[in-house]
Every structure is written in structure tokens, then in C-alpha cells.
Amino acid sequence: MLPNVPTPPSPGRKRPTIRDVAREAGVSYATVSRVLNGREWVSPEAVRAVRDAISRTGYTANPHARSLATGRSGSIAFLLTEPQHLLFEDPNFSVLLRGVAQALSDRELTLILMIASTPEERARTISYLSGGHVDGVLLFSPHSGDPLLGQLVQAEVPIVACGRVLGYEQLISSVMADDRNGGRSAVEHLIAAGCTRIATITGPQDTGGGVDRLQGYHDALIAHGDTIEPGRVAHGDWSRASGAAAMRTLLEHDPELDAVFAASDAMAEGALRVLREAARAVPGDVRVVGFDDSGLAATTEPPLTTVRHPLDRVAEEMVRLLTDVIAGRTPLSITVPTSLVVRESSPA
Image 1 (cartoon, one colour):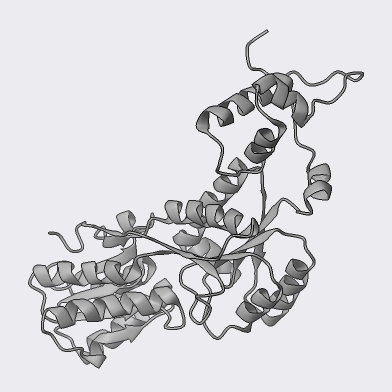
Image 2 (tube, rainbow, N blue to C red):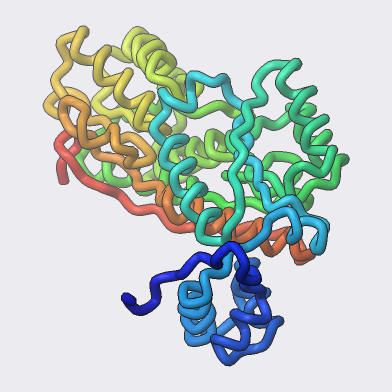
């Protein structure tokens, strides 16, 4: 028989237990329990020993028994507050969903996908989450002023948000990119390239990312001694269509602008399309920089210079932080660094 290949128990054989795994691994029952529940205060050697013992004994967890013993469901909600179509249209959400699914699988936790963009969906969401069907919520695209945020807090469900939750910073843990410095680095790159009429297409101003990336734009211009021209600021909602509409508005106000910083790659792609229609060459006439470095950025025409938003790491940190919050630790926020990725839409 091949080594480390689990042998399922025969019909008359007793099902392996955690204590069998502990005995096989040469560790305590508590250590096996911590490994199975994804806790972090276990040495790598102990983790390997437990996983090898699980493989040799053929042990499989009984989720129902674990739920009864711990009072937990073993399920985590991926909660998106945007319309369903954005889950597939915006490449960031698919990357985050994939990263969260992998991180939860590594911890033997089940992912439940929930959409809450309409009043009806939100009512069902709160009812479900308040019923103890999940152990925690990973919240994506929260908007300030949304009553769902207060309802989630009142439901006392552990929450970790992707991005800063405006107005709830002390109550909801979050993992975010360094949006402000990322925005600043994008505009500093354009200034260094000699651009003097730099416009921006912002994200929604009821989101932390939208506010902070616009502040980064302001920081760079002010540090360079430039004034903020209101007519060079147009607002979008992260989508391609909003980027295109904003680009038309910017060109109407200042046909001679020579650079655009778009707060998402999707909006930057919309801007590129409008610039082509207006016969403005990129980067010859107008340089364009996006934000996210999603899979979209390398496929635009021309390929997009952008600020890399490390979504895989954000997803991993969100799951790790949520397990801490579920365990009773104090909510906190984590900021991960960004970096500029230079491509043909604004070469060095």
C-alpha cells in the first residue's frame, strides 16, 4: 500500500476520531483541535504531523458534530452590496471571491455567497445572518449611509470589510490597500512624465477607496505646487460606462488635458475608448493611469499603467482577521501596500 494514502474505515470498523489523530501524530488533543479550526498558535512541525496523521488514519471531520460542540456553523458569508452583474463584470470581485474561497477551504470553512443590493435582498440577508447560519461576514463594497451597515452591527455578527467603512471604522474590522498613497504615486508618475493638465475620474465618494484615491490625487498636485481644478475632477462608480461618461465630461471642460488618473481599471478602460473616439492618442496626446492591476489592465489597448491593488493578499488577510474577530479579538484594520505597474498607456 502506498504511504500516507488514507484508508476509509470498513463497514464494521470504528470511525477514526480526533484522539486517534492525536495519538498517531504524537501531539495533544488540543493541538489537533487547533489545527482543524485554523488557529495560528501551532508550530509548523505540529501542523505537518497532524495533517500526516489525518492522511494515515483516514480521519474526516463531522461538521454537524463540530457545530454542536462549538456552537458554530462552520460557514462564512461573502457579502456583496453591489448589483449581481458587477460580480462578473468587475474583475476585482472575481479575484477576491477566488482568494476568499481558497483561504476558507484551507481552514475547512464553507463559503456562502450573498448579494444584497436591493431592499428585498437586504431584508433577507439580515434575517439569514441574524439567525446564526454563519459565523462571520466578509463584506465587500460597503457604502457610507447604507442602513445595512448599522443592521449588521446590531446583529452582532463578526464582520471584516474590504476597504475602510466610513463612519464605522471603530466597529468594523477592515483590510484595505493603501489607496491614498497609491493614488498619489499614480499622479506623481504623471507629473514626472511632464504632464501639466492632469484630470481624475474618481470612485464613489461614499466609499473609503473612492475618497482616499481622490485625496492621493490632491496630495500629489498640492505637493507639486499645483492648484486643484474642479473641472478636472469627474466622478464614476467603478464601472466602464461611468469611466466613459466621465471622460467625455472632462474633455468638454478641458480639451487640452494631457493625463488622466482613473480610480479603477474598469473606468480607465472606458476612458481609453472615449479618447480613441475623440482621436486623442494614448500616450502621445493623453497619458492614462488606472488603479487595481486587475486582469483587465494588461488587455486594454494600449496596456494600462496602473496601481497594483494586491487583491489576493487582501482576501487572505480578510479571512485571517475574521477568524480572529470570531475568536473574540478586538476589531482592527490592516493596510497593505500598493505599487505602480508601468505599461504602454503611460511609459516611464
